[in-house]
Structure formats: structure tokens, C-alpha cells
Amino acid sequence: MKIFIDTADVKEIREAHEMGVIDGVTTNPSLMAKTGRKHREVIEEIVSIVDGPISVEAVSLEAKGMMKEAHEFSGWHKNIVVKLPMTSEGLKATKLCAQEGIPTNVTLVFSVNQALLAAKAGASYASPFVGRLDDISETGMNLISEIRQVYDNYGFKTQILTASIRHPIHVKEAALIGSDVATVPFNVIQQLTRHPLTDIGIQRFLEDWKKVPK
Ligand code: E4P
Image (cartoon, rainbow, N blue to C red; front, side):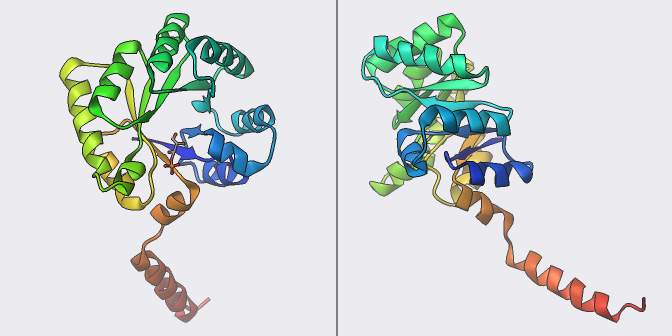
């Protein structure tokens, strides 16, 4: 499973990249707003750090405006993936982008049928939001299993990008189900590295090392 980092904070991206675990980056307007920096400037810094797919979200509500943004973003760097909303206008733009060879990430997917339509329109990635489903008492990970089954039934090439991940169990379950990608916030990536027995083990080895004659 590929791991993308779900942030626009370049400090976090650099740190995770140095750990060698990052295959790409997803951004959105909320993550971008947290940086307090200019959009293009942040994206250009991100593409200079990570050599992989970088999702950049369009904010137009109509396909025409989305295509204008898609052309602009994809001109910034070859690794840009245009993030489009799961709406009928978003699907129109997804189809046009597919025809032009512009990779897309259809975002805000909350049902199997939406994921099916995103694949039919030619999306490179579909992003089901598991955490936001959990928030409304639906089990988000069930959606990932169902989309996996439908995509496999018909051999769709669209990659499942599990999004809105909130904790390590989401990552583990996404991997077990066979999600193609999980986009993970930095704090969860840090949580993934930890195990209490690893810490205890290091401590014990360091103490025993002191007893070794040198
Ligand atoms: C996906 O690409 C989104 O950026 C993200 O996963 C949304 O997560 P949230 O529900 O934590 O905002």
C-alpha cells in the first residue's frame, strides 16, 4: 500500500520524507489555510521535496472552472494530481482531464455508487473519507471493503485512496482490505512508528551495553 501524507505543512512533509515512507502528498483548502502561505508557493516547495503524486484541490463548482484550475495546476509540475469534488460537475471535469491525460483524485467520496461513478469517469484516484463517516456513526472502513470489491469485480484501474484517516487502526485496516493508497496525517505517521516493546527493548539493550567490557 502506498502512503501519502495528508498535510500542506512542508516541515512535516520533509520529516516524513526523510523517514523514507512517503510516496505522495494530498492537500486540500483547509490544510492549505493552516499554513498561512501562498498556494502555489507551498505546492512548488512540496514538489521539490517529494517525487510522487501531489494532489492539489480545485475549488470551482462548475466543470469549466475546474478545467481552468486543472490546466493551471498541471502546468506547475508533472507530478500534480488535480483533486476534483464528487459532483456531477466534478465528474464532467474528471472525464475531460482523463481525455487530456491529466491525473485526477475525486474527493469527498462517501458511497460505493459515488466511487463507481468516479471510476467510470476515468478518475486516477477516488478518495473515500473514512473518519468523517465514523463521525456520523457509520463504519468508514466498510466503505473501503465495498469499493475494493466493486473495483475488483469489474477491473477498474482507479486507485482507492483511503482518506480522512484519524488513527493507526484505519491504516492497518486499509492495508488489510487492499486499499491502493492511504493518505495519513503526520501525527498518525508518528504513531505508526511506535511500540512500547520497542522502547523497552532499546532501554534494555542500552543498559546491558554498559556492562560490556570496552
Ligand atoms: C483527503 O485527501 C483529505 O485531505 C483528508 O483526508 C480529509 O481528512 P479530514 O476528514 O481529517 O479533514
